[in-house]
Image (cartoon, rainbow, N blue to C red; front, side, top):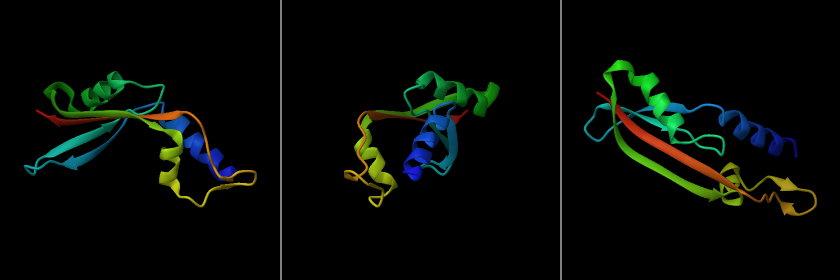
Length: 106
């Protein structure tokens, strides 16, 4: 049960700010994958992070992805070994909203 608490806590903490990671694009140049997933965020958080990364140079949006994933599907990513004493496997209702913005600085 404590493991499930920490997973939920991690989701809550990550909802506070967009995160990014550097990626290599098909042409070999560097780009960024900006993640602004969660109910408390939207694409404006991704755009703000893109502005922080690229600064005055500006950026080009290469791709924008987003979907609503049922929480029971998203939790399976963490492994099927999480058990609840009363119902077998951990089952939660609700959904997880994912948003990704792929950019390239100019």
